[in-house]
Image 1 (tube, rainbow over the protein chains, first blue to last red):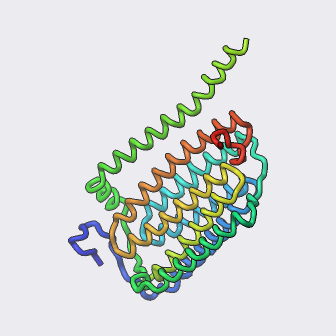
Image 2: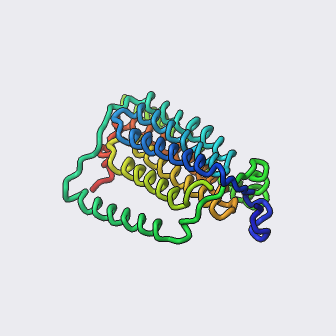
Image 3: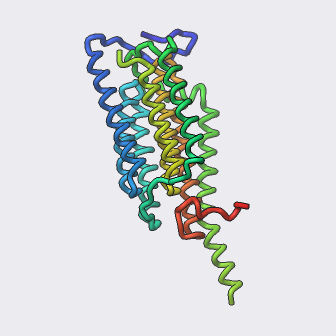
Length: 195
Length: 101
């Protein structure tokens, strides 16, 4: 089923597979359970290396869900960028610095009680909003955005944003380089002052 | 037919809450950055599901930008953490109180 022509010729192609609906739902719920479990393990481990490994498992589950929702290119990018690049960067830093295992912060009751109550209220309201909104009850149909369609759509309509975001990455690169370099110069200055 | 859209939103909400807890309650700068990563990932999940729900590719385009933002944020954040670690010798955020009055 093509999307409305007004919304763009490259809307997601969707096709109905009524016979295999339980299979898709099973895949979704299994991946969701794995993701939530792995993330829960990740945020509670005392050792950062363990939490990074659990988080890689969680991101693999997210990539599965991206694929299920018809975004194969984003699934590949999730594995390459998130599970590959970002988490390996975390792993490098954890191994480079001597990270002592640390637990949860334990603030006083007066500090976390208001935050907990407000967070609980937000949680209840969010669940109510999501569960009562009629638009959110619509079942997702399977669809597929082919990588070539996705790329053409991206560079036809959002080429300027792509350029801007690439510029942002360049700035981040320069910033990281500067932060790594500034300390060496700083230490050199201090050595000069000491004698 | 996969699942109702609300279930995906609930999953993304649960993940986001986990990221908030990790960013707020852990006594480690690296774990705080990891919490931010979890939050960004859950937002991406909601975007992809929304792209499927409304049959618009903009949601997927936005996830690509989220990836780029996450990569930039992680590189600068980790460089800052290494810089701070070399200065103070600790990753405990409570050590970083030079500006505290």
